[in-house]
Length: 282
Image (cartoon, rainbow, N blue to C red):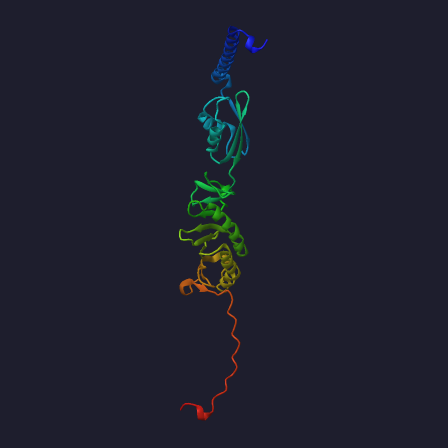
């Protein structure tokens, strides 16, 4: 029987039935969603913590982070949960996943500190050159260098430190502190307390200045019955030379200047023939 031959009242009845069935299905889905949202069985009851947990435990995270989470298994905003976990001390990155019916699985990546930042004990720099808030107190962090510089320059200081540190090793000393001053000059401090004024320049120029210091300062110190560990101050801002101050040496100004190498001696000029006596001025 074609649709044209079906009585109009039958078609209306079929349409009404389809609409009622659709409405019933939608109402059923809505009821199930309401039940799921409000059923306490789906409230977040536990957190499984994986990954780096040297500075955070499941207990501490549950106490600090879980109270900030809003919603249950179905309605929890995973991005908001991720941000909440990343506010915990030492946490660099968090991956949050649901575990049916009422748990979360969190995988943490912690910061790996490689330096202190700003000379304070409240900020550190990780190996990616990022500054993060953390207490740097403790014997395990005492050996870390200190980086000081303008905001946003931590990665630059870390990279420069990595290039300069090996150049003081020949003096049996370590680069303890590196500072980038507001006007672009560099200042360093060694583990014996010596201050090194490096001045401005490219990384290659700074490396060359430290190489000059490492190769010649021990020789200068030896002339005064001292060693490299007795260096108090080295000013590397002189062109091709530097000023050195040694502990306990009372030379004039306690400064010694040394050029990297003497300039090559000019070749002697050929002797000029003297003029005849008749051509000389009286």
